[in-house]
Length: 301
Length: 312
Image 1 (tube, rainbow over the protein chains, first blue to last red):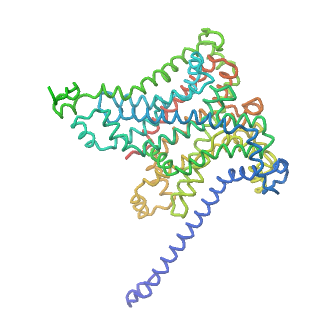
Image 2 (cartoon, helix red, strand yellow):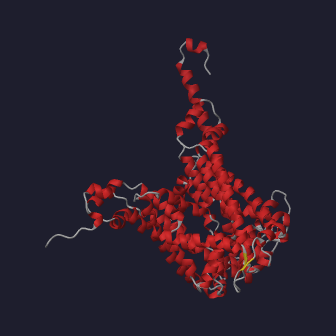
């Protein structure tokens, strides 16, 4: 704080140091604020991650250690043998193969059909286009149980229950969410590119196949990724349509395993981690695509 | 004639004429997968479920038309229906605002200039990738009365053992607690929204003397109100239909509703009725009531959005 007297006698030096110390205080305060926030976020992140860490630790314990009280924080012996023992009782490979047989075709189906449909709603002009598109979006509001019951009856009547077909076939007819995402992407493609090709005599199909689709690769990866994860982790649909144990998916199989072996927490946690591993690996490999996809959805929602 | 190819109807005419012609036939071709899918997997089931809701149908024998009986029983004499509905409404009313608030705060924190933001964001997002079955069973272990991590953690604060999964008073809080673990995607969406707010607005407000709370209340919240609305609507629709988590958490001992059915959610009850007791007509009726509820709530939130949401 300077006084009038100081200014009158012309003491710029003191003004400078007072301002400098005020700036230093502000910087220190800012650094303190950032440190506090960092510690807070760190604590929250640890709390969020701890359950998973605990899952891993538990998978290496012995059964009595899980039930002892007070809590055993770290097993006396790291029992990696829990894993092969669990896998001997949990047919991981068969369930994984089943899940793959469903997920891969479904992902291909959703991506292919949604991009074709999205193109029709974005790069082509026709009367009522946007109105029908709102109808597409409106179907998102329909609770899945409304369609699930009659669909089950329908599939039962044509003998598709207890096969993978009800889980794969619908994917080939477009998914509103994916259509929405892809349409947004197609809409932002430059019109001139297409007009040029059309003027040269290319049909719409060619424009779609050779111009729009290749350009849409980022959006297609997001759609494919989301579809893969949705199908891989789906529980309700396999639960309803699959009753033969040999056809169980990983999720279904895991719950079934839990029912029989839940007393053996370490073994079950080991099985859970094995089930988690593929999707975890996929997530870390494609994180960027993932986060971009979510962001894109939310901002455009 | 050698050297000339016949031109199709669509490519005749000048270039400009071709561009301007209605593209409806081609468009029809492109969207035909969706049309077929809509008719087969949406329209037909919707009409079908209206029909089934007026019947009694147990798959083995053909459906028997019984008029409004299903609805009469549902509203008049089915205590499980009422309980499931109440539980689900309470669950939605508590968990959705709670999760939104938590996600918003996390996003605000992550938006600050601290090192390792990407890693933290991953930490918050990753749990929502965990498939619900693995998540449910993990939390069964964490919520054990003795030795479960949650009670151990609370023990540090002097709170003694809560029987999360066996005490009817605590099952709903348990469900809500587990639900908060999946706020990851909401955080990411909020974060993106926050980063979209132009800095000049904050700076202008700060020049006018606004402190941090004022900034949040008068700049941040209005500017991200579309994002809040989006998360709210999605959150409500998902919460009303929650199935896998409650089913796994409580479905393991015969009664998937938990002690005294305190954790019975609507979808779980629907599943029981339709796929365990094979009363498909009754289940269809329940599904329609849910549809109406969701529809009404969506309309309400759209009305709210007109008044409360600030669009650029």
